[in-house]
Amino acid sequence: GDSVTQMEGPVTLSEEAFLTINCTYTATGYPSLFWYVQYPGEGLQLLLKATKADDKGSNKGFEATYRKETTSFHLEKGSVQVSDSAVYFCALSGSTGFQKLVFGTGTRLLVSP
Amino acid sequence: GAVVSQHPSWVICKSGTSVKIECRSLDFQATTMFWYRQFPKQSLMLMATSNEGSKATYEQGVEKDKFLINHASLTLSTLTVTSAHPEDSSFYICSVQPGQGFEKLFFGSGTQLSVL
Image (tube, rainbow over all chains, first blue to last red):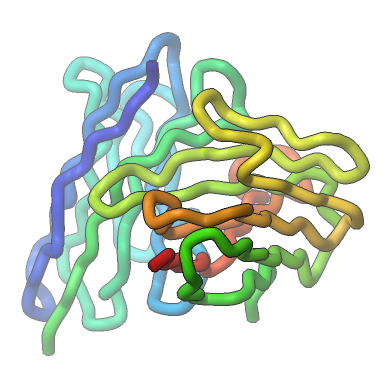
């Protein structure tokens, strides 16, 4: 079945450092790919998405490119801030229907001043 | 502010008791709500899809008699873990989909359940 694998955390960075959180997937068909973010005490929020190969999703300085050849959707940001500290979830839309999201384990990011 | 309110945030209960988790849609009516759970170091997994006024649809491997879902109104869905056991200890999250597409998917802040 469909699955998402993302790097274990926590990822600990200093402010203004470069961020990469790896995400790879296994799916039949052509899923859409997503990154969700969960800030402390809040619900998951959609951060960005890409719906087809080579699409780049971007939001709030974060970017991720849908790489079909490597089945990856790595999240990057050039300069992180303390306010980016959160848990990041990679997800894909299930091949059985758009309503089913398949998530990874989540990666906690801690940014220190 | 929060679009989806989920309560309680965390709960500790004794083995054999039942626990109810509420998920409220604050800003809109939602015919569909989803329940997820996440065991430690595992993926967030869909448990069931809750449809207002009808029976919930459970994912494979989820016991429908153990995880009772009630979606009696367009703004409230409840998940009751009946006769909870330590292996039910997990993080439970609800989500609400008032419209089409994943941009319209809103999540609660989650409930951490610990069964002693």
